[in-house]
Amino acid sequence: MTELLTGLVRPTDVPFPDRLRLAAELAAQMHEAGLIRADRLADAPHDIATYGDFTKDGRELGRDLARYEAWRCNDAVYAALDGYGRLLAERLEALQLRWAAENEIQPRFRVGDRVVWPKVRGQDNMGTVVSIEPGGRYSIQHDNAAKTGSSLRFLVDFEACRAEGEPAPSRLSSLKGLPGKIWAAISALLALEAMDFTMRVGLLLP
Image (cartoon, rainbow, N blue to C red):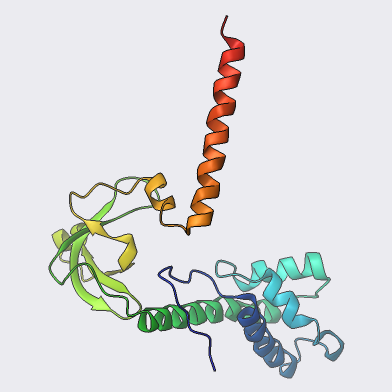
């Protein structure tokens, strides 16, 4: 029986047991291909799961394994390790699809609505919703793509979008969505920091 992914917070990472299972599958394939010795097979899954990540290609992962776990890597090993990031991405996609289905996540916007979603840097993205996709995502045509006639679409999480003209949520308001005990602890910490700042200013003033 699989555990329900309850809660309104989207999964953004793959739990370590899943990482370990995927790493074990990859290690077994590498062993069959003669890329992992039999005496290293027991530790290999844990090594891969510990140092592997979505953003690492096989060469980066192989270098970390060589540096920290004394792996002997060549181009064939790098090529095999390349698949681990893809396995993680596929697993996360499956977790997000299941999360959206089990929690009956509903879209706030409809096809044709104008929406805004943040960039890492610079001005926010703006576009039009063209379809509702599985996993709690919109398919959006960016305004720049519409101007050039491009068919490029962006898959954007429901929760990342807001209406055109709607102000971006402040950092403080996003914290208020945390569970009560956590929010109370953060509030207390902020209050202590404010008191400390006031005391320091008082000491500096004549």
